[in-house]
Length: 131
Image 1 (cartoon, rainbow, N blue to C red):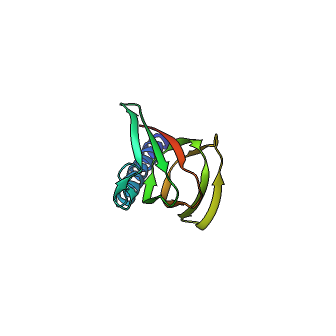
Image 2 (image 1 turned 90 degrees about the vertical axis):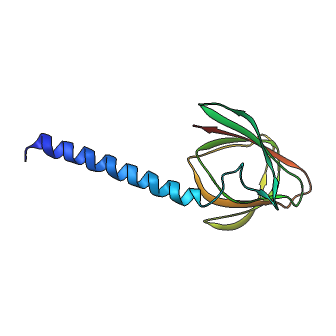
Image 3 (image 1 turned 45 degrees about the horizontal axis):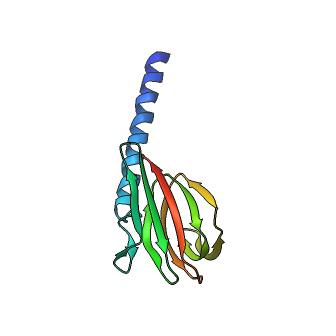
């Protein structure tokens, strides 16, 4: 086998691994709802503001003692329109955090999390997902 055949075989093998890993991730994520499908006690907490072939933009609103049932996130950028205090449970455990108004964040993905507004104010988040 010459070096070009080895390189070609390696490229094909790498692409196959990427394809298989993406399919496995999709299967894990499909077992949980995305942020729009997940709600709180059967009620939606997020509204779509814009969706097209490039992006999906939604706003999630959490009054005091309102949360977001366990869900996953695809790649996204977020911006806090109105901050609040949250109890967050994810793969690292449970913690309480103060999320200030004007806070922005980016995540390649979140396998799962669930949140609860434990503060005294209504918190609002803008989420932008590339497609």
